[in-house]
Length: 384
Picture 1 (cartoon, rainbow, N blue to C red):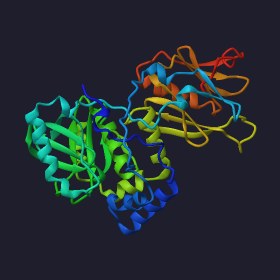
Picture 2 (picture 1 turned 180 degrees about the horizontal axis):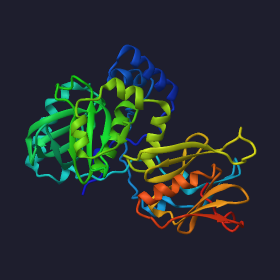
Picture 3 (picture 1 turned 90 degrees about the vertical axis):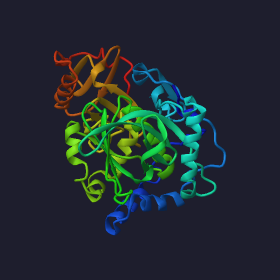
């Protein structure tokens, strides 16, 4: 199997340092009806996306246990405890696709000729590099067909199955506006800008869809300094009904806002693409002082997250790992137990019922909400 190291592309630091610029650009886009490519042009002018020195990316495989890591790290300057998860290499977006280097020399030459054909689309200092390949099912209006998909630093290529001489479709990554994801997260509708060869939106399915989307998000950020938002609902049949019925204007007005893009970055780097946000609330450390909070509580249909005041990731707890939900009588806080780990959020206690319902949807129907009468759990090493 290949990995993301094959291209020698440079990892990026945490994004959205210029969220205000991003928001202003979006507002201008609505007024002037600019394309996504035009929107990001102004951001590119202010951002060094292509440093001269390129280093190979390193990938550390992340397990579910890593997401629940609670060993404290002391910030000597602020004398506060943070979880080791907060200090991970969160600039790395992990994915696993087959490498072009695994193909035969004949197939590699075919790919080289294809990339040479589109070379004039880019400047002399930019080189289109193959990032990974995999097999997908493409859904046309009336049928489906197996394709070989190749991702490059600038585009998505669909080939006839195992025939790299015949490109059936090419989509520039900076023209992808949105992902409509079917429940089960194996099928996706790619909403693209109008005028992209007038071929309309693309629908594909693959058991490696998570890796495909993570790769595209990584490539999108590298070329446009923004991630691609998404929404998950319905089945594949709903995607086929939506194919060309949602306007770009609706996408921009509904999903392109600063908060949504910040959360998308958190989910891409620390969760799963396709997670839908259910609740996003400031979390009060001192209930009697409603003006002060130092963390955010984020709940999706798959996990609970704790973010700090600057929207930086602190910890993720998968819903299917939760073993107990409790309410502390003394502090009126919601407590979550996941194995030997514990989290506490100063939230209204009715959130415990929201969490319970979400956990039950993951298959744990026996879970219930308990009341905690002592400080036993508070003496544990809490994640936040």
